[in-house]
Length: 114
Length: 114
Image (tube, rainbow over the protein chains, first blue to last red):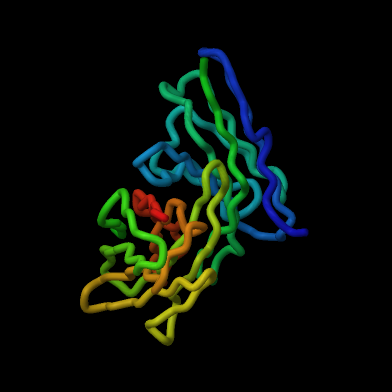
């Protein structure tokens, strides 16, 4: 089945540690996205990539980093510089340019900083 | 800049009653419009979308939405609520021109009372 796989689903980390969230898609989509979700704040865009080896900052990129070395993969690193990293992280993909922009989502990763 | 406002962070209805979730957008040009649903600790699933053509759009699970350009609205309705409709609902907008990511509203949590 085609889809988006995020791992791990739950992750705990200590303050000051970097952590990387995995996102893999087999939909052959060009574009991939990372959103952060906090209660009552909706989805906020962290980073997105419309093509391999290129990515753009979203609205809340500070304290995060990404890479896009392969079309299928778009990992997100939450660095120690992110002041409040506890949140639900959602990865998504879309077909790409000249399309409606409809997003297909993974199941999410919940990060808790202890 | 485009933006989305969802009126009411929490809506409660009785089982069998009409569901109405409100969404207004701000955009200087015609947008693409989307409604997504999210169940607890899961990713988002597309309910329906408006791109072009008929302004009344039917989606999954008996939901529909009407694009009203004069009111800049895209409200989501369902004639008869079911217990399984309890979830969080997000409205999203994207400009037709350009290749910008979707912008989401803050979400509306729907509770269904037996």
